[in-house]
Length: 401
Image (cartoon, rainbow, N blue to C red; front, side, top):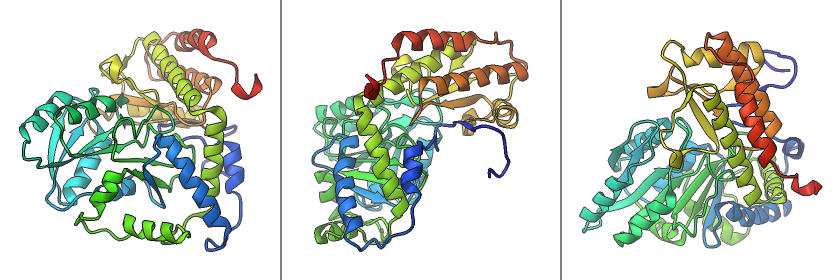
């Protein structure tokens, strides 16, 4: 029973945690097991190999950690850097801001590059910093691939090109929490040294699993990094990998079975089809927003996110009221505006195990809410725009062809 019951299903359209597909829920509905028995190491071995596929890496080493994205951040930083090391990091929204705060609290010397919220990372400033850094004092470039607070996606290939243009050896650390398994992510091709994600986003699992993938260069850096780490120490994981038991502490058995089911669903659909589906849902949402006469928080098309859209409301409307009304009247959960954009935007999450008709239900709900709060929306306008696009662009379901 829900803590506050509402009939029917809750329409969960926050940009994480997301809907959990029924096969994943069924896979997790099991008793505890002895993780030292042969079964769990055997499953873990296959999971580690398959996790590499979602990062598109053959050389990276993954770590499945019982934590959140915040813990995965800390794992990436403390295993590769030492206190006082210089990093370059970009503020483009609330989550990039929080990662910078973590870097500073861990004792790193952070060059903060700020952009307006709604813009991508300023890569021209990155280029100038790398050009000036002939002594190679910058030890890492840290960037959020997809900023969930503003719906901005950064171009990681361009970051790698800048690093290569200046032959700079800085590590390339990427938060892919709201991008990996929804947006194309190419760890090896883009020369990403540490990439990370969380289970509650596009993997469509419950919160509680942070997945970090480290390149050989990052593993080498971890051998000399002086940051204090215990729970997140890759060395402990690698020791148990070599023993074939894999776990330095007790894993969540249920989440491991859930991860197995979630990966199977992604691979059955095909990763490229998953990316295309997210692109369709993102485009349809943006067309609806345009039809409503509202603006996207993201200022340029090159930065549009296919996992979350932050919608700017008129000054006379408090966006938090839209979120409250959605939950109280329509059993629809939307994302609040955070920090600088609190009260100014609401967010529609369109990531994870989600299809076109589910999204249309959300868009219909948003239209009614906008009408409720006094915005002069024409009912059906956004839904019609999204329908017209989706009807022309939605393919047959792969497994049913």
